[in-house]
Image 1: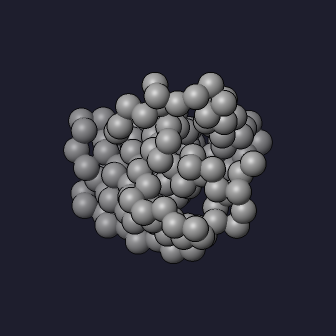
Image 2 (image 1 turned 90 degrees about the vertical axis):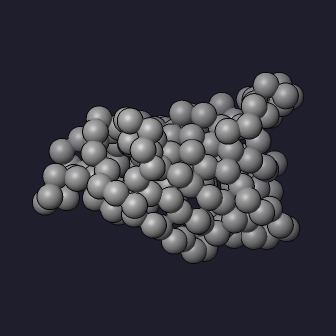
Length: 146
């Protein structure tokens, strides 16, 4: 990840903090899906998935849909970080190895930001740092975040 967070204005830092708080709210989807957004900076975001029993498939590994939800949440935060409210337009996931361990981590960054379309990439890793999945998400900007 880039270290753009330290170069942000106080206003941007407050926006990023409020974005994290809004996404992690107690009654939101992230809580019931065991997802926590942990960091947002300009064009980047990080989050994690707690591997509770209800996110595992019958084989005892993290369900692919849970990995996609983690990637969608974190790439969405990265897309929002540049000041546009976005909704997911399309996504593509590549599952590379079984996701196991106490937590799955996701790092996302904006690859391309246009007037209405943003493309973000996600890399998901396990506790050992091994890549378990990657994804590309396209977002449609519905309005400015102002």
